[in-house]
Length: 403
View 1 (cartoon, rainbow, N blue to C red):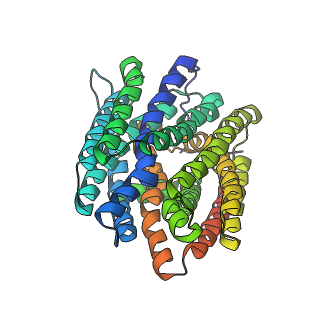
View 2: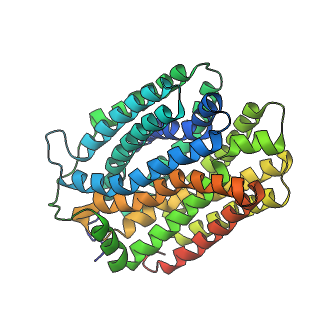
């Protein structure tokens, strides 16, 4: 049975602003290491094995996320404290994330880097469980496209800001200290001001049985989960090894500068698309068309690079992918919160759904490393990403309960 207890009170601009600011710190600290800091660090500590190392680290984090996300969600639903339940998990996750970042900067071998980044990933999952449950708890349906944009729009600003700062800062520890400070400082206004709503009793369990039940008994939830997995897997395949693609295939003189340029183009278009589509989606009351358009845009960009790899083509393709990803992210949370099975287990079910976000982002690099190393290289990788994206756009139309 779908959730039928919907929030009625509109969220203020100040609440949305603090919510967005906290996500800025989280996204910057999570995505910038994935795109630049970790690959750069691994290239120096283990040049020969950097691709395999990066794939293994992300695979381990992905497997751990498969278990921790629904577990943390269930625990979050059951948490009762004077500090609140969602807010407690946000604060605890942000603190663990920041500690893990500092530890990552202190490492000098790839196994130490991997273990420290695993702590970062666990902290990120903890904070995410609390943050995403807040949308279902407190945000009315008419604002969920806007709040989805407030959640994912900061990806763009965070990655641009983080890359700009980190490429100018020498030394791993200094880079990770800056990211850790960003997590804590930017999350603080939300944690200090937010007050949770009244709680409902949670009697849901956690584990493989609950995961299977949520997917089997709720077709809309299952198809939405499948869409999310494939859309994010396509994006992970297309972007995980961007620095190495620029270095090994495009062979430009200054790969770090070109990475920053591509990132600015990609995230600039994503930012425009996510905010425009978020507002349009709320006004039109439609969600699925934005997912389909986003999937097509991402697929076209991947196809362009697969057919004609080159710096000019890559710039144009990056724009298409950015527009497509932004259109999808603008409605992501709005669709997910519309298909949650039950109000009392929101965080658990969102934890399951978040596997579709973080699982592909962490397991995608392992698959990408296998494709690059043994199945045809970067052109095959981009072709696979394009096909995966198209399939995700088809799956969303199986969700008949969402317009």
